[in-house]
Image (tube, rainbow, N blue to C red; front, side, top):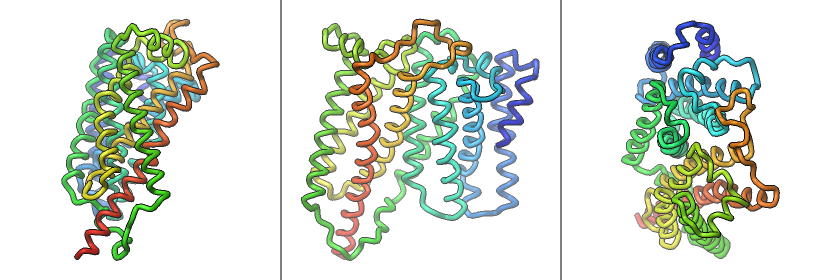
Length: 366
């Protein structure tokens, strides 16, 4: 919570009218001062896990998550604004519905995960899958946010502070690689000694999941063709009737759709294979957790801007640019996009069961 008094102090500093000083303040406070304070606290606590690199990473990111929460407050005029200096001279493209969405997400969902993972480190508890969900969420955000800033209508407003996103593009990848190399915790399951077989109900669940994965693959290709400029009448009517957000000049929704096409589809195909032949897919749950995090963040930042406009006093959108979903198309929009959140959660739960089944059988053979 130290973020709030620091932001209040910076809001009234004249130096914050210079974009370079805003960037320097971000580096100095978030990545140096907070890191030093975390190190001093870890020396006094001396808890297990407090000397891990990611203990400091999560602590610093928890601080910046509170900064993002205050940006969300400012954008939606919830409280007195303390981050106008950053929105004006740091990252002005955040003054948008998409910017509001990702800041609310970071200040709530990511912040909760940081607290849980820090606590897990100190208590020597396993947080592998929570970490993969976090890594997937952050990586999805960065793969959409940074390219969208560059190619979209706000490309001319990029300032030095965009470099503050480099740690968010780096550490989730390093974390995922580190955890990937570790043995899967699914080896240590309480079902050892039991024979795990796929019953009728589970077979039906798998068939439904496979059917949905095939549908999601087809949808990803269709949306991809739309944002790549398909002249098909069906593509044009889809944008007009169901997803006008795909014509957004800011390009973030288009980047999310391309992410589905180029990154999600390979996972969909792998998941189909893993469900058909579950034995030995040691990292199915890891990938499912990574995908779940990406799907949660991606769909939140896709649905929220489509139905919510930042108050006009702060928005960088001129009146008339933001296009609401037609009333007749809202049901289809919600059904499709919410399924892209709900089914990945079910798939993750199913994947964890596949891991448990495999390792239980392997232990029984011993």
